[in-house]
Length: 435
Image 1 (tube, rainbow, N blue to C red):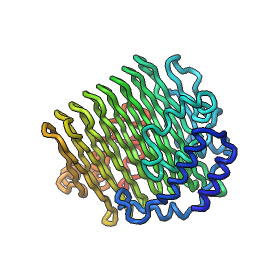
Image 2 (image 1 turned 135 degrees about the vertical axis):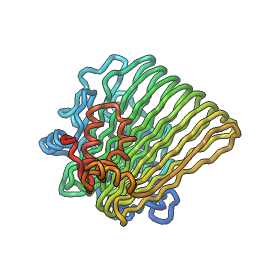
Image 3 (image 1 turned 90 degrees about the vertical axis):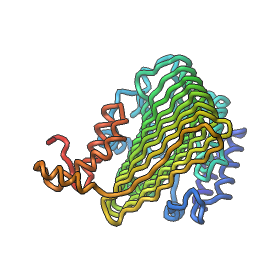
Image 4 (image 1 turned 120 degrees about the vertical axis):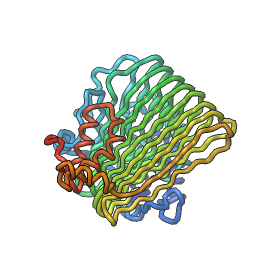
């Protein structure tokens, strides 16, 4: 913990006095009190953070623009979008593009928002994901100095997606970053948000990102998460969403590897007619560890949630899925569905799955289910009887299993990248160009 204390002292030394500085101090004290979850914390029962806790990370003081440009060109998905690029937690204006923002849309780096609109920005930060949420949220708040602020006005439909790209490049020392994303969507607005986490395979990096999302009445946000942080990197993410009446939130989450990747998605359905839709793929190989925890609170009647997560694990990869739905008393006529299907391609791969329902109302429709298995031998036999090789048959069946959630990606470049990545990293590779 000493390396974090030293980094925090240096980070906070020159900060202006006031509410934000005092909150950062309180957040770091909370982090020190809780410590890394390595001693039987239930929410981290299947995910070991000991290796993360031992690493001496430092905050980046600069970046290699040429290396960042190369990684961006080679590994990030190119979109026609409003784009912000961060390298090792630092905003890079040379790689970003905010030149064509509509008048009713505000997109800016958190550092600039804190300089220009301190009171407004501080009012958004920590309102949903406060320092008591968990240890990593507290750590994020302590170092919260960069990230993005996104505000869209009432009745605005934003055509271009907002594309936040977090790049991790190799350096002499292990580095860390703590981006904070703040989103406020006005009544009847529509917005698409893409977050990409892209890492150099040589980068030893710890990204600890928190997003707070407020959707006003009838607002709609489609949120895409594409995670490829690098084989030596840790990625911890928390998304906290508050939804008002008739709002819609969709999160499509593609976790394609990393040393350890953990995502917490918490959604509060606070108004009648609010709905959330989650889908995701955990695609792990080697010794990667991929973990998704979701929590949906049905706090109002006639609210709806749907979850569909799949995992494909090979070699010694490990996956974790914990999905929980809580139906509050008097939240009648709600519907909540959960599904988790897992495909193990190796005898040494492992999945821990725990769908949960906690219901305090009577008139509800709730379901949950989890399945784990290997490829269907009957389907394999059928494909091989049609002239396909064993290798191609296995690859096609695995890709078909993944495609149910990949098909949720409505942005064509994202869809293509994820499908090609899955097909190219299967033990029985599928060349999509030859099909």
